[in-house]
Amino acid sequence: MSGRTELIPAQTPASGLPVQRVNLEVSAGPDAGTTVSSSAEKLTLGTAPGNDLVLTDTTVSRFHAELVRERGGYRVKDLGSTNGTRVDHVRVQDAYVADGSTLTFGGTTVRFSLVATRDVLPLHPEPHFGGLVGESAVMRALFAQLARLAATDATVLVEGESGTGKELVAEALHQASPRASGPFVVVDCGSIPSELVESELFGHEKGAFTGATHERRGAFEAASGGTLFLDELGELPLAVQPKLLRALERRQVKRVGADGYRSVDVRFVAATHRDLREAVNRGQFREDLYFRLAVGMVRVPPLRAHLEDLPHLLEHLWAETFRSLGLPPRPFTAPSPETLHQLSTLPWRGNVRELRNFVERSVALSGALDASFLQAASVPAASAGAPTVRVELPYKEAKEAWLAHFEETYLRQRLAASGGNVSQMAREAEVDRAHVIKLLRKHAVR
Ligand SMILES: Nc1ncnc2c1ncn2[C@@H]1O[C@H](COP(=O)(O)OP(=O)(O)OP(=O)(O)O)[C@@H](O)[C@H]1O
Image (cartoon, rainbow, N blue to C red):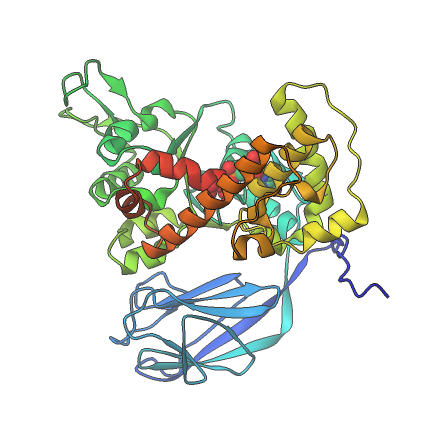
């Protein structure tokens, strides 16, 4: 016995992914007697219409809390509510709940219970969809959902941690849709200075502002006949949000400095790694825009939720690395069981992007997948303590590894101190916001 936890090979049930169904029954408060039953991965509750459990209790916030199904069970997460969330009378921010737990939201009490029968989600027949790969049941259930959504023109909101593949999801939706022959236009709200977002989205007339020496069409017009993908939607300035709402509702946009509206024909997909419901509670995101976007909700799982895809992903990213570097492909050699084991025990906070970085480093430094090429940040022990100077590396690489540790530690702690608000963090750190975003991506911090 090695005492090691083995990586479970991908075993995909042929028919579908069995998912748990839960019941939420309001047992005390103005809505006593109301019951909701669902097998959704995420359930929200609050007073805003559109929550899965809508409460009328005035001590409950608009988006008060959510219940998320994970491998280890169900978790309840408070969404920054005014009066807090309790599990069995203990106030919590984020906690696991058990069958029969009593949950309290403000002045309302809800009984949480598991339903004996399981629902079954359909699975996509192939272990890939567009540029996404995954053999696991969770990924193939996601592909099946994407295939269904691609056939429609519905607006889609893609949620997921950084590096999980949200942009690939948007691109795959476009490619599988009837608009595939039209343009796929990407706007990253996080990397555009806030004063330029409106012109980037809707265009401007000549002379509309200092520097507007020519008229310019915006992303909506550029995407006409195709799909417009807005990344980092949570960073969209509040002032632009009503204009986006209008554009989505009426399919009309007005260039900055123009008098009239122009019609546009676009399919709209947006992504966020931030919880927009929390942003709504804080007054940073408009509730009406949130509901307009959340017509089709797609949640991309973090890598730690489908580790059985590691071998398949490594092989895919290996080929991708050679392709992107313009190098002749080299045959893939599967990692040793030890390496695979080590990879499967890491937190992968940067998700598939971090895995890709690891593959790229391995290719560049040795041509074989080797766990010693994991960046210091991936390995919990290294990121927790003081940085070690890796004297076994050549001077330049040792210095880079040490600097990388400094950058990541600084970014993580600064970002946490500013409550995850990148603009505020950039101001406080006296670093240009676009540079901060580049660094955050480099270190897979978000
Ligand atoms: N399931 C997957 N199969 C293949 N490649 C993937 C998968 N998921 C992510 N990737 C790769 O990981 C990298 C990050 O993906 P992507 O940029 O789509 O993530 P993201 O969620 O949009 O990140 P961010 O929130 O930082 O914008 C890309 O190189 C992408 O090709």
